Each structure stands twice: as C-alpha cells, then as structure tokens.
Amino acid sequence: MARPDFISIPLFIHILGAMVLIGGLLVAATSVLVARGDGRLLRLGYMGLLAVALPGYVVMRIGAEWTYAKEHLGDLPGGDPTWIGIGYITADIGGLLLLISLIAGYFGLRRMRGGGGTGLLRGTLYISVLLLAAYVVTIWAMAGKPN
Image (cartoon, rainbow, N blue to C red; front, side, top):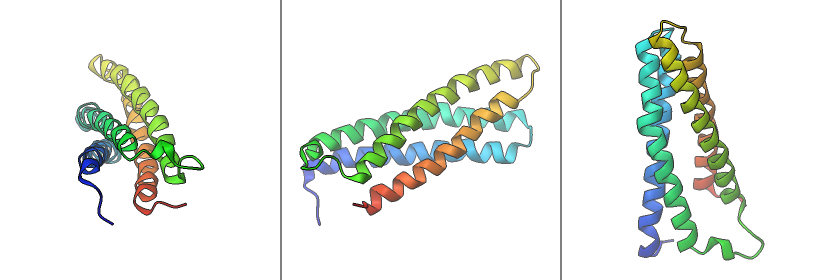
C-alpha cells in the first residue's frame, strides 16, 4: 500500500535518524569488542556515541513524533498498536541509557587523560551493545508490525 506524500517526509526522517543511531551504536559496539584495552579505540567508540548516535537519536525521535501526528495514530480505537508501544518503550529507555552512557563515558575519558584505567569507558560502550540488541528488536517490530 502506498503512503500519502505528506507522510513520506516525516517517515523518511524517522528512518534516517534510526539508521544513523544504529550506525553510531555499531561503531561503539565494534570498538569495545575490538579494543582489548586500547584507549584510542575506546575513545573512537565514545565519539561514535557522542557525534553519531546522539544526533541520530534526536532526529529519530523528531521524525517519530512527526509521523505519529501526521498519521493520527493517537486517534486509533483501542489505543496504540503493539509495534508503536515497543517503539516508544525502547526509544525512551534507550534514550535514557544513551544519556547515562554518555555522561559516564565523559568521566571515563577524563580518567584516561589522567592515566587511569579504561573500565568506566569500556562499561559505557558495553551499554551500546545492549542498546543495539534492543533496537534490532524494535526494527523488527516497526517493519513487521505485529498486532
């Protein structure tokens, strides 16, 4: 079924933001899995979260809310479909986890500059692995639309 043109742009923005977010999470997850204690790779992963995943998250959420409003999904009888609920839950919890990981990663970078360990920064990037897994489920829900 073809979508009306007035929905195509908000949906494109939502999908673009989601794919940029996934790309940033992939950089972070790959860097922590490959780093083996290398500080440069851990910094690269953190910068992937900060410079790619965070803006992608913001664009994804703007596109999601815009699409939700344009399609009048809030007016559906019986409430939101399951796939929208899955999207909101993973986006809200994922956004909170992303913010927590960015704050913790900032302090991890500061410790690394002072010669400290990389444990805090590694922990930050492991959160990206968790987020990546959650967003794969979300992509399945958005594409398959169960319920």
